[in-house]
Image: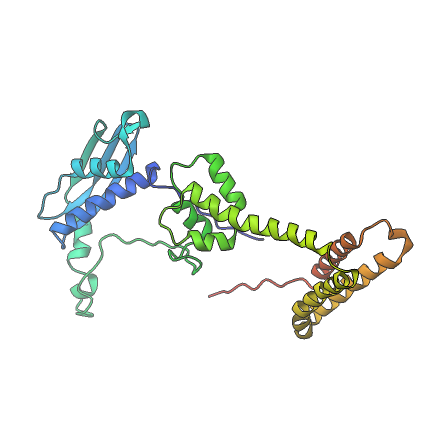
Length: 295
Protein backbone atom coordinates (compact mmCIF):
# COMPACT_ATOMS: atom_id res chain seq x y z
CA UNK A 1 0.00 0.00 0.00
CA UNK A 2 1.39 3.37 -1.01
CA UNK A 3 1.52 6.11 1.58
CA UNK A 4 1.96 9.80 0.94
CA UNK A 5 3.52 12.27 3.31
CA UNK A 6 2.18 15.79 2.91
CA UNK A 7 2.89 19.09 4.59
CA UNK A 8 1.62 22.62 4.38
CA UNK A 9 3.36 25.95 4.39
CA UNK A 10 1.82 29.31 5.23
CA UNK A 11 3.07 32.86 4.83
CA UNK A 12 4.08 35.25 7.60
CA UNK A 13 0.60 36.78 7.90
CA UNK A 14 -1.01 33.48 8.85
CA UNK A 15 -1.89 33.14 12.57
CA UNK A 16 0.45 30.16 12.92
CA UNK A 17 3.38 32.17 11.59
CA UNK A 18 2.44 35.21 13.68
CA UNK A 19 2.61 33.09 16.82
CA UNK A 20 5.94 31.58 15.79
CA UNK A 21 7.47 34.98 15.05
CA UNK A 22 6.33 36.49 18.35
CA UNK A 23 7.71 33.53 20.32
CA UNK A 24 10.99 33.73 18.42
CA UNK A 25 11.21 37.48 19.01
CA UNK A 26 10.71 37.04 22.76
CA UNK A 27 13.38 34.33 22.83
CA UNK A 28 15.85 36.46 20.86
CA UNK A 29 15.27 39.49 23.12
CA UNK A 30 15.89 37.48 26.29
CA UNK A 31 18.96 35.65 24.99
CA UNK A 32 20.44 38.96 23.82
CA UNK A 33 20.48 40.13 27.45
CA UNK A 34 20.95 36.79 29.20
CA UNK A 35 22.67 34.09 27.13
CA UNK A 36 22.16 31.55 29.93
CA UNK A 37 18.40 32.09 30.10
CA UNK A 38 15.93 29.24 29.71
CA UNK A 39 12.90 30.19 27.66
CA UNK A 40 9.86 28.03 27.04
CA UNK A 41 7.54 30.54 25.41
CA UNK A 42 4.39 29.90 23.41
CA UNK A 43 2.04 32.35 21.72
CA UNK A 44 -1.64 32.12 20.91
CA UNK A 45 -3.55 34.63 18.81
CA UNK A 46 -7.01 35.36 17.52
CA UNK A 47 -8.75 38.45 16.19
CA UNK A 48 -7.73 41.38 18.36
CA UNK A 49 -5.88 39.29 20.94
CA UNK A 50 -2.35 37.98 21.55
CA UNK A 51 -1.52 35.74 24.50
CA UNK A 52 2.08 34.96 25.42
CA UNK A 53 2.52 32.23 28.01
CA UNK A 54 5.19 29.89 29.24
CA UNK A 55 8.01 29.36 31.70
CA UNK A 56 11.13 31.52 31.69
CA UNK A 57 14.20 31.50 33.91
CA UNK A 58 16.31 34.63 33.44
CA UNK A 59 17.88 37.54 35.31
CA UNK A 60 16.84 40.16 32.74
CA UNK A 61 13.66 42.00 31.84
CA UNK A 62 12.14 42.41 28.39
CA UNK A 63 8.93 44.19 27.43
CA UNK A 64 6.96 41.29 25.96
CA UNK A 65 3.98 43.53 25.20
CA UNK A 66 6.12 45.83 23.05
CA UNK A 67 7.94 42.92 21.40
CA UNK A 68 4.63 41.33 20.36
CA UNK A 69 3.27 44.59 18.96
CA UNK A 70 6.45 45.38 17.00
CA UNK A 71 6.51 41.89 15.54
CA UNK A 72 2.93 42.24 14.33
CA UNK A 73 3.76 45.70 12.96
CA UNK A 74 6.69 44.31 10.93
CA UNK A 75 4.40 41.64 9.47
CA UNK A 76 2.12 44.40 8.21
CA UNK A 77 -0.94 44.34 10.46
CA UNK A 78 -0.86 48.00 11.43
CA UNK A 79 -4.38 49.13 10.53
CA UNK A 80 -7.75 48.12 11.94
CA UNK A 81 -9.24 47.60 8.50
CA UNK A 82 -6.87 44.65 8.01
CA UNK A 83 -8.75 42.83 10.77
CA UNK A 84 -5.79 42.98 13.13
CA UNK A 85 -4.02 46.07 14.44
CA UNK A 86 -0.74 45.97 16.34
CA UNK A 87 -1.59 49.17 18.23
CA UNK A 88 -5.13 48.34 19.37
CA UNK A 89 -4.99 44.56 19.89
CA UNK A 90 -4.87 43.22 23.43
CA UNK A 91 -1.67 41.54 24.61
CA UNK A 92 -1.92 39.19 27.59
CA UNK A 93 1.20 37.72 29.20
CA UNK A 94 1.26 34.81 31.58
CA UNK A 95 4.91 34.02 32.29
CA UNK A 96 6.01 31.94 35.27
CA UNK A 97 9.37 30.64 36.41
CA UNK A 98 10.61 27.36 35.10
CA UNK A 99 9.19 24.25 36.72
CA UNK A 100 11.46 22.69 39.32
CA UNK A 101 11.05 19.25 37.75
CA UNK A 102 12.18 20.54 34.38
CA UNK A 103 14.99 22.65 35.86
CA UNK A 104 16.26 19.58 37.69
CA UNK A 105 17.18 17.91 34.43
CA UNK A 106 18.77 21.05 33.04
CA UNK A 107 20.78 21.96 36.14
CA UNK A 108 22.46 18.61 36.33
CA UNK A 109 22.16 15.55 34.13
CA UNK A 110 21.62 12.00 35.31
CA UNK A 111 25.10 11.03 34.04
CA UNK A 112 26.70 13.72 36.17
CA UNK A 113 24.68 12.68 39.23
CA UNK A 114 25.77 9.08 38.82
CA UNK A 115 29.35 10.12 37.95
CA UNK A 116 29.13 7.97 34.85
CA UNK A 117 30.63 10.55 32.52
CA UNK A 118 31.80 13.94 33.66
CA UNK A 119 31.57 15.30 30.13
CA UNK A 120 27.80 14.80 30.15
CA UNK A 121 27.19 17.31 32.92
CA UNK A 122 24.41 19.18 31.16
CA UNK A 123 20.94 17.77 30.71
CA UNK A 124 17.81 18.87 28.90
CA UNK A 125 14.64 19.39 30.87
CA UNK A 126 12.28 19.20 27.90
CA UNK A 127 12.90 16.47 25.38
CA UNK A 128 11.43 16.69 21.89
CA UNK A 129 11.71 15.06 18.51
CA UNK A 130 11.12 16.59 15.12
CA UNK A 131 11.78 15.63 11.56
CA UNK A 132 11.71 17.49 8.32
CA UNK A 133 12.52 17.30 4.64
CA UNK A 134 15.36 18.88 2.72
CA UNK A 135 16.59 18.73 -0.85
CA UNK A 136 19.27 20.47 -2.88
CA UNK A 137 16.88 21.89 -5.50
CA UNK A 138 16.86 25.37 -3.97
CA UNK A 139 19.21 27.50 -1.85
CA UNK A 140 16.78 27.12 1.07
CA UNK A 141 17.05 23.31 0.74
CA UNK A 142 13.29 23.17 0.27
CA UNK A 143 11.17 21.86 -2.65
CA UNK A 144 10.36 24.25 -5.48
CA UNK A 145 6.65 24.87 -4.65
CA UNK A 146 7.33 25.92 -1.05
CA UNK A 147 10.36 28.00 -2.01
CA UNK A 148 8.46 29.91 -4.67
CA UNK A 149 5.37 30.28 -2.48
CA UNK A 150 7.47 32.02 0.17
CA UNK A 151 8.97 34.38 -2.40
CA UNK A 152 5.71 35.44 -4.07
CA UNK A 153 4.60 38.98 -3.32
CA UNK A 154 1.82 38.74 -0.67
CA UNK A 155 -0.09 41.45 -2.55
CA UNK A 156 -0.72 39.16 -5.52
CA UNK A 157 -4.30 38.15 -6.16
CA UNK A 158 -5.37 34.55 -6.48
CA UNK A 159 -5.83 35.00 -10.24
CA UNK A 160 -2.30 36.36 -10.62
CA UNK A 161 -0.86 33.42 -8.68
CA UNK A 162 -2.88 31.00 -10.84
CA UNK A 163 -1.43 32.58 -14.00
CA UNK A 164 2.11 32.24 -12.67
CA UNK A 165 1.50 28.65 -11.59
CA UNK A 166 0.31 27.79 -15.12
CA UNK A 167 3.32 29.34 -16.84
CA UNK A 168 6.05 28.34 -14.39
CA UNK A 169 8.72 25.92 -15.58
CA UNK A 170 11.95 24.56 -14.11
CA UNK A 171 14.01 27.08 -16.06
CA UNK A 172 11.85 30.04 -15.01
CA UNK A 173 11.96 28.92 -11.40
CA UNK A 174 15.76 28.61 -11.52
CA UNK A 175 15.95 32.32 -12.42
CA UNK A 176 13.23 33.48 -10.01
CA UNK A 177 14.64 31.64 -7.00
CA UNK A 178 17.59 34.04 -6.81
CA UNK A 179 15.27 36.92 -5.87
CA UNK A 180 14.12 37.34 -2.25
CA UNK A 181 10.68 38.63 -3.35
CA UNK A 182 9.07 37.71 -6.67
CA UNK A 183 6.50 40.18 -7.98
CA UNK A 184 3.82 39.51 -10.56
CA UNK A 185 5.19 41.64 -13.42
CA UNK A 186 8.68 40.19 -13.00
CA UNK A 187 7.40 36.61 -13.14
CA UNK A 188 5.09 37.46 -16.04
CA UNK A 189 8.07 38.76 -17.98
CA UNK A 190 10.04 35.59 -17.23
CA UNK A 191 7.14 33.49 -18.50
CA UNK A 192 6.21 35.49 -21.60
CA UNK A 193 9.75 36.07 -22.90
CA UNK A 194 10.67 32.41 -23.54
CA UNK A 195 7.08 31.65 -24.54
CA UNK A 196 7.29 34.35 -27.22
CA UNK A 197 10.57 32.81 -28.36
CA UNK A 198 9.04 29.33 -28.60
CA UNK A 199 5.95 30.50 -30.46
CA UNK A 200 7.90 32.87 -32.69
CA UNK A 201 10.51 30.26 -33.49
CA UNK A 202 7.84 27.72 -34.41
CA UNK A 203 6.05 30.25 -36.62
CA UNK A 204 9.23 31.35 -38.38
CA UNK A 205 10.26 27.75 -38.87
CA UNK A 206 6.96 26.92 -40.53
CA UNK A 207 7.04 30.08 -42.64
CA UNK A 208 10.61 29.71 -43.90
CA UNK A 209 10.37 25.97 -44.42
CA UNK A 210 7.73 26.61 -47.08
CA UNK A 211 10.34 28.58 -49.04
CA UNK A 212 12.86 25.74 -49.03
CA UNK A 213 13.13 23.22 -51.86
CA UNK A 214 11.33 19.92 -51.39
CA UNK A 215 14.61 18.00 -51.15
CA UNK A 216 15.84 20.18 -48.29
CA UNK A 217 12.55 19.85 -46.41
CA UNK A 218 12.72 16.08 -46.78
CA UNK A 219 16.27 16.16 -45.43
CA UNK A 220 15.11 18.10 -42.36
CA UNK A 221 12.39 15.51 -41.78
CA UNK A 222 15.01 12.77 -41.80
CA UNK A 223 17.20 14.85 -39.45
CA UNK A 224 14.44 14.86 -36.85
CA UNK A 225 14.30 11.07 -36.89
CA UNK A 226 18.09 10.97 -36.75
CA UNK A 227 18.12 13.20 -33.68
CA UNK A 228 15.60 10.91 -32.00
CA UNK A 229 17.69 7.85 -32.83
CA UNK A 230 20.81 9.54 -31.45
CA UNK A 231 19.00 10.13 -28.15
CA UNK A 232 17.47 6.65 -27.83
CA UNK A 233 20.25 4.48 -29.27
CA UNK A 234 22.74 4.70 -26.34
CA UNK A 235 20.02 3.83 -23.82
CA UNK A 236 18.65 1.03 -26.00
CA UNK A 237 22.13 -0.52 -26.19
CA UNK A 238 22.34 -0.65 -22.41
CA UNK A 239 18.77 -1.70 -21.62
CA UNK A 240 17.11 -4.50 -23.54
CA UNK A 241 13.67 -3.38 -22.40
CA UNK A 242 14.15 0.04 -24.03
CA UNK A 243 15.25 -1.56 -27.29
CA UNK A 244 12.15 -3.77 -27.30
CA UNK A 245 9.82 -0.84 -26.64
CA UNK A 246 11.46 1.20 -29.41
CA UNK A 247 11.13 -1.75 -31.78
CA UNK A 248 7.43 -2.08 -30.94
CA UNK A 249 6.88 1.63 -31.56
CA UNK A 250 8.64 1.48 -34.94
CA UNK A 251 6.70 -1.62 -35.99
CA UNK A 252 3.37 -0.06 -35.03
CA UNK A 253 4.21 3.19 -36.83
CA UNK A 254 5.13 1.33 -40.02
CA UNK A 255 1.96 -0.80 -39.78
CA UNK A 256 -0.25 2.26 -39.44
CA UNK A 257 1.48 3.87 -42.42
CA UNK A 258 1.31 0.81 -44.71
CA UNK A 259 -2.04 -0.72 -43.78
CA UNK A 260 -4.87 0.73 -45.98
CA UNK A 261 -7.30 0.50 -43.05
CA UNK A 262 -5.41 3.27 -41.26
CA UNK A 263 -4.81 5.53 -44.24
CA UNK A 264 -7.09 8.15 -42.71
CA UNK A 265 -4.64 8.65 -39.83
CA UNK A 266 -2.05 11.33 -40.50
CA UNK A 267 1.65 10.50 -40.31
CA UNK A 268 2.26 12.71 -37.28
CA UNK A 269 -0.70 11.34 -35.37
CA UNK A 270 0.29 7.74 -36.17
CA UNK A 271 3.69 8.40 -34.56
CA UNK A 272 1.98 9.74 -31.43
CA UNK A 273 -0.36 6.74 -31.23
CA UNK A 274 2.52 4.31 -31.75
CA UNK A 275 4.61 5.97 -29.06
CA UNK A 276 1.79 5.96 -26.49
CA UNK A 277 0.82 2.37 -27.24
CA UNK A 278 4.42 1.14 -27.09
CA UNK A 279 5.02 3.01 -23.83
CA UNK A 280 1.90 1.48 -22.26
CA UNK A 281 2.88 -1.99 -23.46
CA UNK A 282 6.41 -1.47 -22.16
CA UNK A 283 5.11 -0.43 -18.75
CA UNK A 284 3.08 -3.64 -18.63
CA UNK A 285 5.87 -5.91 -19.87
CA UNK A 286 8.70 -4.29 -17.91
CA UNK A 287 7.26 -2.83 -14.70
CA UNK A 288 9.63 -0.71 -12.64
CA UNK A 289 10.31 -2.28 -9.28
CA UNK A 290 10.06 0.16 -6.39
CA UNK A 291 13.03 -0.01 -4.05
CA UNK A 292 12.43 0.81 -0.40
CA UNK A 293 15.32 1.49 1.93
CA UNK A 294 14.90 -0.02 5.36
CA UNK A 295 17.23 1.09 8.10
